[in-house]
Amino acid sequence: MKQSGEFFLRKWIRRPLLHALLGGLLLACACAPARESAPPTLTGQGRLIVEMAGFRNSQGVARVWLFASAEGFPDEEKGALASSHGEIRDGRCELTFPPLPFGAYAVSVLHDEDGDNRMAANPFGMPREGLGLSNGLGSRRFGPPTFAEARFLFLMDGLRVPVKVEYLDRRRDERRKRRQSP
Image (cartoon, rainbow, N blue to C red; front, side, top):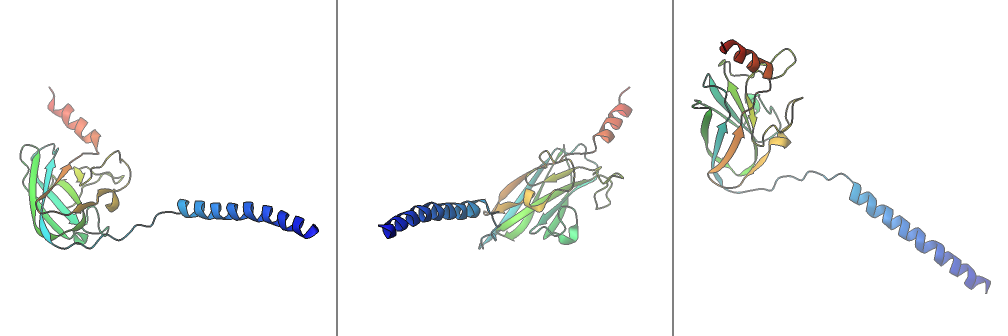
């Protein structure tokens, strides 16, 4: 009888312990950070059309950089896969990139008002010229945007990517308005 009682007790201890261990293991696997998987390998190529809007004036040019990785993003031309520039008319500009391989990209747009081919910034590093990204700036107001935030999948020929150009240096705009008003 003693042996069957010990067996019964061991069985009752083993089951909850086993269930607790399995539950903890499942919980640990579920809470583990997801690994970013490599983008799928795609075949084919197509034209990419960037539609920009929101320019505050027609001074300078719209500089557009297309990035395939985070290197140099968002404003270093040497890290870009392709770059182009276009004339701004009525607060808008449209550029078409020649056939590109399908894949994951990010677009960065600069309203280069002074024509120096780089982003002008105030002493705190805040851009003084307009900036736009393929997925928008959102509520970001501090620090540079990341490639991951702007990344999109280019999977078809003639894809149109809308970009809204935004100006983060609002004080400069306010001063200009005050100067222009009587």
